[in-house]
Length: 396
Ligand SMILES: Cc1ncc(COP(=O)(O)O)c(C=O)c1O
Image (cartoon, rainbow, N blue to C red; front, top):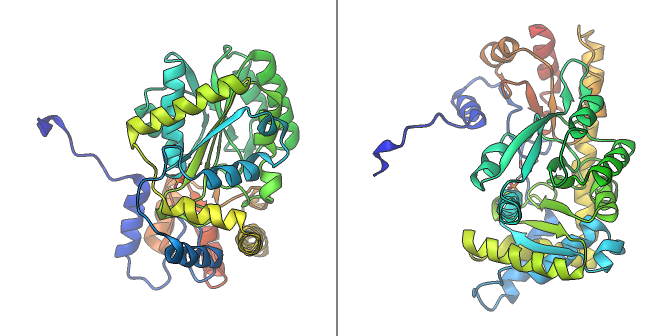
């Protein structure tokens, strides 16, 4: 039966990670990983998470299933964080949400729900986008297309090309946008660009599908939700998928949420029942622990205060590393202007190196990054920054 299956090459990033592990050079640096790291290179368990976990373990009296939609308190707190407590669309009861296994599970539920509602729908992904968007959404049966997003030469969004592409779309076409901290390029839409997109989507009947996996890691929790809140206020229908992997460091606990904005309350009830039914058909019930922790951190005053502080530390660290990298490169008279790095947001940016330079960095300098020269800025720290910048300047 399974004889027809063929062996597949390992995921590109996993391949690089294993080369890194095999490298015994003490100077080695890994800028390929997709998770936040602190200055000592660790991906920490946040203090707010540890405290919430202890409380939950002491209080928990059953391991029976949580409902299909997950933890109601978690969903409510997440909706408030994402849309804002007083968002008119939330207050009007037009938003339906379901707890999902991570942002990836959320994308899967959203994908299947879109296919159920409109099998011929086309979903447009940014070029480039998170590498897993394409295979993950394809598995749910969606028709996928790409729109131009990043200008690799100018190191910024090619907004004119994007608008030109959107001007050819049909009503009910769906456009996947990154809410903030674009992965992999770090170039985010400005408020003005979000406003222009809202006008255009409204005019053409385009449905935004916003993947916001890094809320709080660009400019702040409120600021980073600008696009989500704007679209949910302006348009009849919006799809939003969020994740607690990065901003709460709950990666392995698999917790996220899918929300659908509907035209009215009646449709929102129908949407809610379909989200649940789709999830039931994929994994039946969501895992409990991550959402119980996130729900507690978001709703408990003291824990929330602690989380905001820890989230602020992660955000400030990423933004100051970006700044530091640019200063160090300027200080060494790098033959390339890297100032765009300090303007981009989140953990990822393209350095703009050729594949040959990336391989040279890996083989001669033991500095590892994805072949597209996408780096995880959080992999830089005080003890390796000089070596990283020197190595990059050397291959240039
Ligand atoms: C843009 C984007 N969306 C979604 C995800 C999925 O996150 P998770 O499934 O780990 O919550 C990621 C993870 O890297 C991401 O970068």
